[in-house]
Amino acid sequence: MITQIRGRLVEKNPTYAVVDCNGVGYLLHISLHTFSALPEEESVTLYTHLSIREDAHTLFGFSSKMEREVFLLLVSVSGVGPSTARTMLSSMTAQEIQHAIASEDVKLIQSVKGIGAKTAQRIIVDLKDKIVKIFGVDEVSVVQNNTNKEEALSALEVLGFSRKQAEKVVLNILKETPDVSIEKLIKLALKNL
Image 1: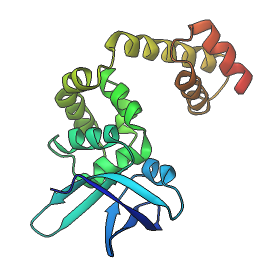
Image 2 (image 1 turned 90 degrees about the vertical axis):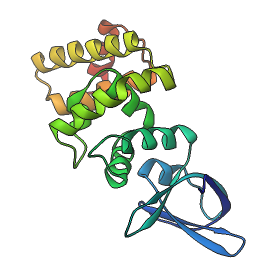
Image 3 (image 1 turned 180 degrees about the horizontal axis):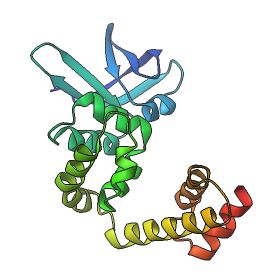
Image 4 (image 1 turned 90 degrees about the horizontal axis):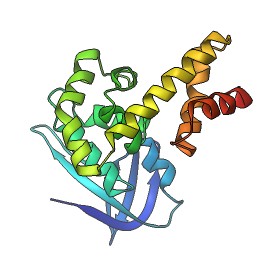
């Protein structure tokens, strides 16, 4: 099993990278977050997972061990293949996926292309306990932030802002200051809308 690759970055695209290791070029399928973390034509280390199927051997590369761990958890769920897991990691960061699963946010998981309601629920059922145990995601703070987020979004909708526009702003604020009070969250959101 290939667990990591260190070498010179030869080619970089949003969906794959080529790393030269002593004259051998390895093509690694990557997420958008790994793509943005890669430097230009420098020495890089990528954590990897080799997916072996009857018709293909595919190497996936990750900029962090946490991203690889979340990927492995996602592909362990029935109905979630490597491509879907990579799409999830391109749509959300590893931390956002952990929080979505821990807080049972079906809508957020379902917003990823290729994931329906049943698959989103299966991901939550299969992985919630593992995510809490492995990464130590505090369920209480996740639920509280989710409640604060929902209350803030409702208040902003009442004030006439579209939910989609308000949700982007609120999520950015919660990323920067996760323990913000509901009042402060609404005030900061109003400044940014």
